[in-house]
Image (cartoon, rainbow, N blue to C red):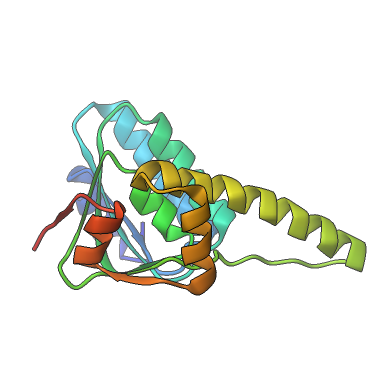
Length: 176
């Protein structure tokens, strides 16, 4: 879901279309997850999820990944603009994964926030590393690459064009 007016959101919902655009935060993830769950409960026709997110948290992405995994209806993901960091996991979770020809993908570390005492921050960093390893394993499974290759590409901040994303295994097709 995006910050679109209510009437537009209603029309998109009727068409079984969910927007995940802008910064992928907990609010956006919760809204999109609720829409996907409601559409899934309403029938088994495919649900289209449009992803255009250049920034976001790993926790927010994992919410959507879990909802996509649990959906009975097929989830078709269409990537537009830029898909980066945590949003890559959402894009890779779909049953069908496509992108527009000018979409750019960036394998980069998802945003993490830490606060508190030095011990708190150390504990949070350890937790983030564990979750990041699970995220990398999830991308590895979706792409057919090793988790080590995914981790290396994330560390380097590797960019891919839509054509390269097909070869990499992130998407299945380019749609205009």
